[in-house]
Length: 172
Image (cartoon, rainbow, N blue to C red; front, side, top):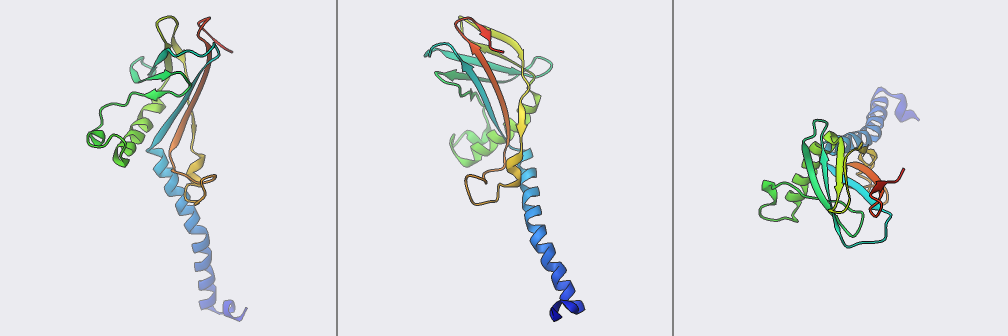
């Protein structure tokens, strides 16, 4: 205890506290800011009718009705967006620069989404209001080297719609 009784010891103790508290706070802040500019869209369209191989198309529009994103679903619930032609994707469609450009693009488009139109030739549901939920919790834990807790700090926009294609109606 004699070490911390001196002025130099108290300064060292404060420096240690700043280091122990400052580094995790700085890492969490860096992840949060990184995640604000990058995003992932997780949109589930769940068809309760018997499975079909028909492909559904989707269109997401902003509040003014302008289409901001199109996509498709084939035999499942995962929406595959039709990304615009991005300069980073010209050389390597699966490269990290392309993934980065797509993530930045989603982060600018997802907050604008207000309605969804989806379906096929037999059933089309138009201009359904859609509010995507944003999840930024991972921004605080991205730096932990454990896949159960950490991960890339992207904002995740989530949406879920259940419908019956045979009856062409929404559920609840």
